[in-house]
Length: 297
Image (cartoon, rainbow, N blue to C red; front, side, top):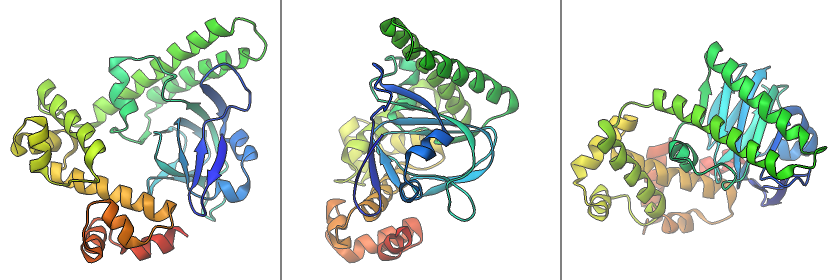
């Protein structure tokens, strides 16, 4: 990983120090801590790659997109590119003492499997607390990945081992997709799921220009009621609530990551008046933009 960026959120780009011919790195949490300066490990960072972490022991608290996630044995975290995290820490804010394995991989490393598209898109859950049988299955999968990754340093058949690692990551992502599928309510059958995903993808493209459900319905060729019904079935939240939450998340990222004035952030997210943006942000997060920015710093 390569660190760069600004005062409060550090941008971390994928860079495998092993210099192996694969868009994948497998390492322990202890190894990651030793690689990062303490001041960096304690600050929020924004990744441009996927990070999957399986906790085998210890405890701490991770932050992903400003939501705290307790980490104990059986915790599984999946961060997507662009998400903001703070590495698991203890009660004093120091990097936690965790026995955990991490997989870091670029967006184009996994095989293009339809079953894993939703997992990689970034609309699914971030954290799971695995049951013992689920933990054992993920632990075996991660151990096999670590073992194969270790052979890259000594063997000559990099191409074949790289292909095998690619498929093993694909299998792990299918396991993640099964967890997400069990954790989410049904979106009113296949058609409802299709409507929901179409809305989420269009929202990801256009949240900075519109929070209107009517706009999204017109673009996608569905009625506002159909969009709302699909979103409620998939997430328990309406289309309007999802649109507002996505704008609020982007506002949080910009407040934490940039020095842009609050009014400029509001304009970038479609608010013509700073007061309207402030009221919206306070309603969504419980804090004013200034309070949130100060808390992050």
